[in-house]
Image (cartoon, rainbow, N blue to C red; front, top):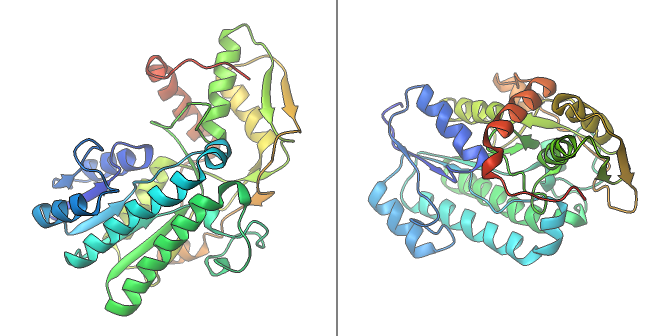
Amino acid sequence: MKNNRIYIAGHKGMVGSAIWRLLEAKGYSKLIGMTRQDLDLRNQAQVNAFFESEKPAIVIDAAARVGGILANNNYPYQFLMENMQIQNNLIEAAHQNNVEKFIFLGSSCIYPKLAPQPLKEEYLLTSSLEPTNEWYAIAKIAGVKACEAIRKQYGKDFVSLMPTNLYGTHDNFDLQTSHVLPAMMRKFHVAKVMGNVPVELWGSGSPMREFLFVDDLADAVLFTMENKLNDHLYNVGTGTDVTIKELALLIQKVTGHQGDIIWDSTKPDGTPRKLMDVSKMKEMGWSAKVDLASGIEKTYEWFLKNQNQIKEVRIS
């Protein structure tokens, strides 16, 4: 398998780069990556031509337009349409070019807003989605179903992995488009540098969230690549969660911020709780390894080394 040509779509992003680093470290030498400038995944003709010329045996789809509540609210059409274009082109090209294995990466937001906790794979499409990110969720659900349909109709090894909230090195720290953990880290760091001024955070701090270090997701992708899984859809997470307030205190401690935290309860909380049931992956033989405190420390170390490449922003 280590001589197989493996295409990692989105190899420059947080997830794709983590997968690339791990596969390279494990001796996979024929990795293929294309920048957005070289290959527009929204363009079907370009994607088809790329697959015909490169002939990858394995495809890992880590390419997506992503962002937090603010970005999803502000750009609903782009989040829906661009994600569908990217995944549809990759899935169809993989199918037409007889790719041996296709790994589709989605998100826990595909599950209903008020689904029972922890979230099981069978809860998909049983109720309505969280409105603040339904555009992205609908696109990802379509990807899951496309992979399931190919698996059912053609017997191909197309698998969907649904990670919980991801964080880690190479994350997006732009406060306008980032997710909760990197946004908090950026705010606490800037507040510390400015003399430990107060940090204002959205919502009440009461929602519960599960966080997975990106290197653990890369490890789950490697496991999926090297093993034939029984089903088409698997949750990937730690199986444990914390309140947003607990997360804030943990990040505040790691960054060394000494000031106050102000919660703006006029801002939306989003889904009250999102904990993944990860028993299916555990039964197959995989589980997460990095605990939250260690992951945050590793992420902050990377942030400190790379902060000069990140645009300055105001705290609130």
